[in-house]
Image (cartoon, rainbow, N blue to C red; front, side):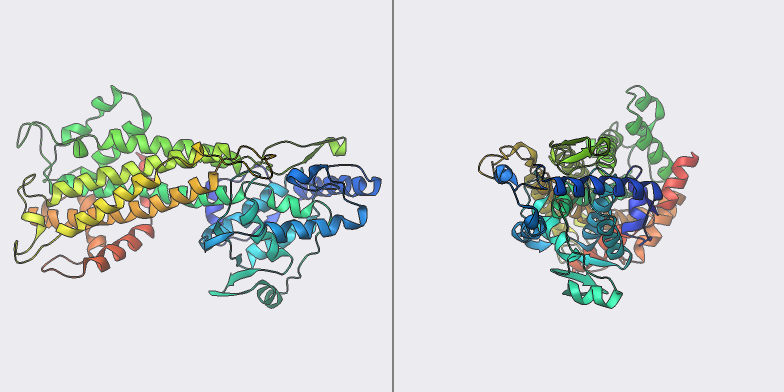
Length: 503
């Protein structure tokens, strides 16, 4: 993949982050980077007072730095700012951070040398992934602490994961023949002043959220069959009457999933109306798809944004201090994603309750093979309820909080990285709730008779049964939940995309 700084997308990022596609810098970007670097070198020689180049940082922006100290200034910056704590980001997020930081620098507004970007891409292509603690960022001035841990690796310090092992960065780089760089004027600041931690976390979260969207519909379709749901609710005319495109699309896909099913009913056959958790699948999941669309739009803008400070314009004629490092747009987007994904889990848990509660269906109580002697899926619903409750706590908006920092120079911050981390946690919980619905829905359709399922849901059922066998007696269901969760997360949804596009 050729990096330009202008046209990175979720789809292209996925190829690099998960499929390990190699990355190189475009010629046009290379020329822009060279021009902006000359400007920085000229400023240092002329001893001009420019923030972050010949001054300190934050509250120290009024402190002039002598020419002979500008290199030391950059090392001091990343050493002092690398104070992240807690568990490290997943390797996928670390990998995304490298890609996004390189793409931002490739725009040519940051004044770094080409060697800095080349070193980032060398790490990426060699699959050397910095160990970056998740906690410690305020989300303005960007993700200072996480990105400092990334910058440490470029100078041969810190730790990385390489070939499945955690080790000193210098050891991994030596094995790949990558030399640490020597930081020059502005380069430390350019590496850490940006939103790449929250955006990287957001990219990885959204890629999973999209897959959750597709699979939640497949699983919901099985539940509809297990509960003899009313097919009329998915009639196209109902959804055209409201006119939300995402709702219309979900209803269309539900009709596709359930086409040819002998387990669905018409209104009035068994009951006049289904409960909302069945009847309102297009309305609720459609709204979550609206959230996904909004978040995708914001992420793809931010992925191609110059977010450090100061920025260099007009070949050095203008060097402007601004605030593009402020993560508010991504903070809002991540808080919104939390709501969209929490609701997927919420409605899924309500369908689980309808599958296991004998007062709400005519299936065996708790889908147990021997009710009373065996508890069946009783506590699986407890687990789902617990995860949904936890999601409600995590869904509290991080973006409404702000604590001043740097002696009140940085007096309003976004907390966007916290929002992104919590969005990812909600998504992990949602996967497990969907796994529980999948397990219970499979048990329900077995009692109804799988020979009556629609061809498409039966195909999905058969694949899932290879992962979780039928419940003939009580067993360690935790193992089944985790196995089904892993299977869903790794499910190839290509046929979903192709079918949807074709139809």
